[in-house]
Amino acid sequence: MEGFQRVATVSEVPPGQSKVVTVNDRAIALFNIDGTFYAVHNLCPHEGGPLNEGRLKGFVVACPWHDLAFDIRNGQGTDGGGYCVGSYEVRTDNAEIFVGPRRKA
Image 1: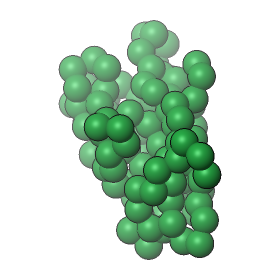
Image 2 (image 1 turned 30 degrees about the vertical axis):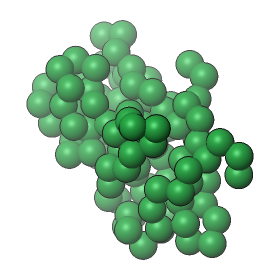
Image 3 (image 1 turned 90 degrees about the vertical axis):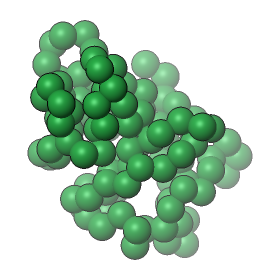
């Protein structure tokens, strides 16, 4: 899997939970939604709140500091304010999780 980095095992991120991983010196929030993994830049673009600590509802995570919300599938803001976060490709192989390149906006 060229361009992908191993970041965790499936057992390290139970369904409904998140984990911060590092990819190319960048903090990435890795989420498990019913066995499917999603990855977004961990810092809210507003003031740097840690998205992995935010409230997760469906595919939307809300920043714990000011409640800005982002779709973890694509990084798009859901509040209409123009904010978004980088999202990354995720693959699993033999119970290992790999994060790849940033998705194109």
